[in-house]
Length: 240
Ligand code: SF4
Image 1 (cartoon, rainbow, N blue to C red):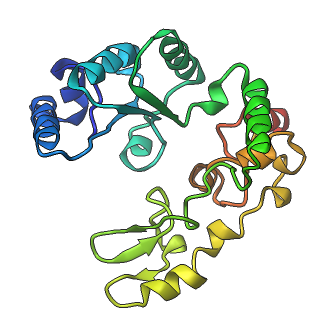
Image 2: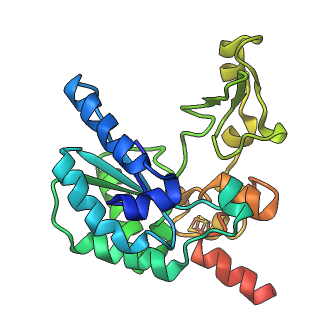
């Protein structure tokens, strides 16, 4: 369930008048009939200051999981020039690190803003290696363990890349098993070893060149690195 503010004043400016109360009613109905609910909060400059209040609201509602998604520069967000600066992203991370809660917090799109990025990656890698977990890189799901179907049946690997370049077929007309078996090459063939500067990056096996949708939107190809990456930003600035 999407809620972009801990109260109507913050949420309804973004989601529409009356939407906060409707969402709360729906959450309570789901809970009553035993359907699991998690909350999703898209962080934009207008609501970035309310993340801790949102955690408290989630606790009060008895919802176990809250995901903060950094606004992605796609669709209307892109048209309206909406993005979250690295400073605000860091503020969100710092605010959330200070809070004690039993709600499971998920951060999506924030990792490149961690000041101790290398350390975090190093620790995750050690842990994953110790558990003998492999294939743990970023965004393995798109086109590999999941896909999306839009209302007219069109199949794509990722909801952020629903354009003709990524069209895989139509679930109403084509054999979905065949699409799944043979399709999604743009995601399945994307390998960081062929992408610069990722091929020499110490975090590459965890990051896997980051988000292909952001790479495509920024540079016109999924076979380029995530534009949110500080190493990539530095490189762009150097050659500008
Ligand atoms: S250089 Fe590439 S692999 Fe390394 S952190 Fe940046 S996007 Fe990820």
